[in-house]
Image (cartoon, rainbow, N blue to C red):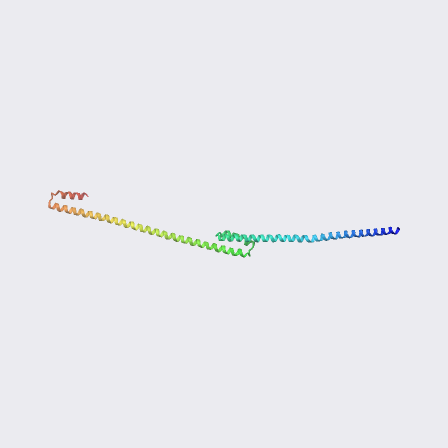
Length: 203
């Protein structure tokens, strides 16, 4: 009976010792895990923040690049529509942000060349308009001179006709006077001769 009690006590002591050992191991393991976790968290946290910052920077750079491309596309549309100054304003803004942007440089050269060509065309049109106006003025002056010459010629013909009529009338008067004088020489009492002379002198 005593041996049985000793056996039971021995087994209980072993079980208790095992329990104590197991609890200590578990407690130590928990503290180790906590320490490891703390160290891991301290190591991963900054890395994640750096990655997030890098991602945001990449997104911002991509957005900026896309904005510049959109601005250059709009500038190209302006060039095609002849709005060269608006195109140059956009291109200059892109070049301020990225002076080495080849597309912006090429578009700027195109815009400047097109604007100069348009100015030259407008100057040619103005020159042609002035030349055309000068030709029209010259033609109008020529027509005016021609009309004046015709008017002077007509006036000269009119005066010539009046002079011819006057000369003809004068010749008729002279002829009538001659006839009347002849009649009076033949017969001083011829009343028709006196009448004719009186009428001629009255005229």
